[in-house]
Length: 272
Image (cartoon, rainbow, N blue to C red):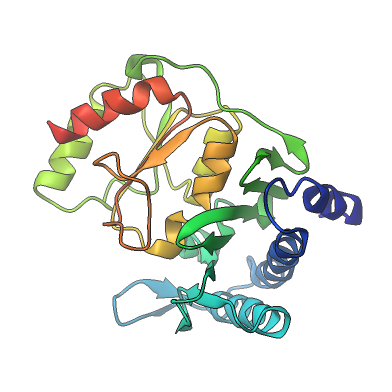
């Protein structure tokens, strides 16, 4: 991001304190530099206790962002994928995913990104998707339009599922049984082939009007909190599979639609 673009995002803070938006942008900048340094440099991949992958880039980026938050706002809480939780009972909590799409990152695919969210009383008021390999950054915030590289974007009109482009991180992310059956049922309604391996980039593309539906499951809180302001600020809708707002207590399912008119349609199909 250029200094001009940083200034633009800070000025476009909407109903969010300017120093909070400024820090969110700085966090994304710092993580982007680290991800870029390790990208396609064979950083090595380890499996965590839950069998999910992690690299040195994930750990270093999150540690850097946490240090920046603690220095600037020591009373804020932090929830991160790699280094645990701090003060989650605070009014303001930062939710960090240093590299969303670690498998893509480690294998050289460009569809990964850093996710930065700020929650106020449990509600996400800032969300950033930084796709460093693509040099794209989506920023959303309460009371302001979502931007891509400083330029406002919008979702597109798509009132029927048959005409929708849809995306999921993987067809294997859905648990066998009722969850996978629900996803398979929904997929039959799409008139176009599904897109996979987009990770958080898919939510950005939805906000920019390129795809219409994103369906996910088994997500951690850090996987979806940043997506909420980005999708909603572009005119879309994002909930769990039951139509409930995404919160710290959500079940890990995510449905995002660019055109809110098809959201209820998709929810009804998922419910069977």
